[in-house]
Image (cartoon, rainbow, N blue to C red; front, side):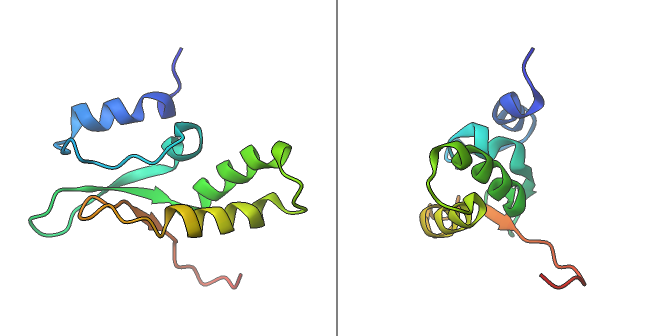
Length: 105
């Protein structure tokens, strides 16, 4: 049985009017269950919205067995910010959400 995250790409494409150029980050094991919605900006096509914290948790979990770093989360943050969040895909570039809270980090 497929998990909801494993077929989210198909569901988004079938249920919403997203263009073929919609950017889904890979690998699905890290990014797909972190998709929390679509963002709309004026007359532009929708873009995917990812939960940044969930991506980091998934990434750290995958990095943990394969890294010599003391802190897989720190490695995940560095990787995500440098390799993914800085990537530009024009008007189809996904958004990473960081919730604003009253709590201090």
